[in-house]
Length: 112
Length: 112
Picture (cartoon, rainbow over the protein chains, first blue to last red):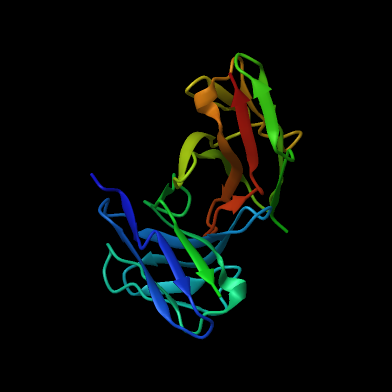
């Protein structure tokens, strides 16, 4: 049972480049979310989805887009990368927003 | 607003020492409380949880009690091991809300 799978694990981008962080879960969870982890700030919610076809903004959505075409997949897109987006990104899934969240291993992104 | 305040780290202890990591929260509704642990190079995983006042969560020798009167959820372990070295996050979710609220994390290092 793979759980939550994120790819890639590491990425270096130049300012202005675009890329997609992939997230897939095999637990049939309805709720999926993306967080960024920055030193001394814990994890902050970027975007979330309560089911296929439904997405919404978290507390730090600027510069990021998401879509949820299937229950399994929840990709995060950076349209034009900025150095302020250098961070570690975690995807999580859960049965609902109130239950235990399962996290992927993270993507360490550096924007130069 | 909603927030979590955790004991500042890093915390360094010797093996078999007693551990306490303090956590207090400010929540606009009735929260479920969690402790997550992040081992080096990995994503977060649930350590323990408590969903109502006076509940005690426990796992792997760690315990935390939901104290509504003091809005606290302190993490304790009677005898730590080198393998407990990790970053620990206190978090909560409010019924009907769509996000986990995290503390900033406490890095714990256990020396042999």
